Image (tube, rainbow, N blue to C red):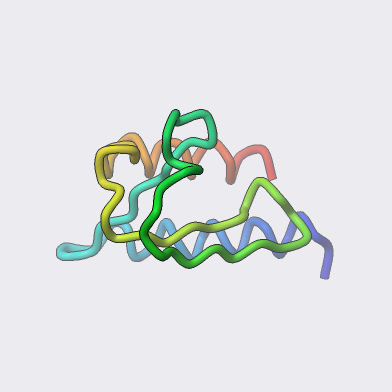
Length: 81
């Protein structure tokens, strides 16, 4: 399977549940000041397609996009992949 198909599949796996009630997906842009130095624990999942690297941290809502702009961001990535 090509990297592009894998990347698209990963984005679809995020987008589909993000439309469900009770599920929130929020994107933290890499250009947010102060996020990289946050002191609390987080989960970072990196892969072969760096733009799809994932960070999970429940206490950084201030740094993330709201849910609708986050979905828009993921849709734009999906179109590019």
